[in-house]
Length: 172
Image 1 (cartoon, rainbow, N blue to C red):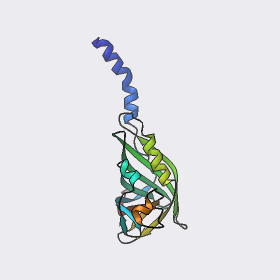
Image 2: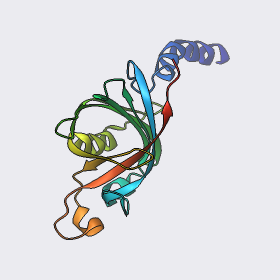
Image 3: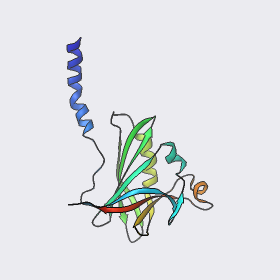
Image 4: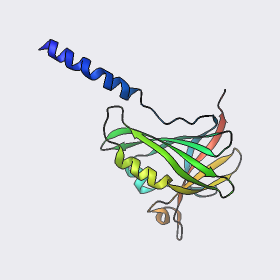
């Protein structure tokens, strides 16, 4: 019995170690680093967390860009069915138009649980956005089209921003 259990565990080990090697997406040439600060309705106007993100217990962590400021990596965590999931997304920014669109995303759980429903919510909210860039220290707010934007930000509003504050540069 012990020998069978041991052989079974050994057979599963390569798959488990491959999964453990899974991590967030990486941004080649990552240079500028910003940490999540708060949700905003507009330039520097704080807001509550949108309900669909609160339901998933979304916690944005950081945003980073490469030297060109065109490629953006956003990382976050969320819960799905009570289990912790990681999320990362790469966006391509059009800096002249102050827009960004989702290029690639990834969500995973350390135990291999399904994170697809939460990933779909975050992907939908990051698919195509305007962004705001303002202030000192420099701030960027990715404006997400959430269902309860009007309830959170007031009449006529259809977006809520995840605001990130620049805190440094990645050492090369």
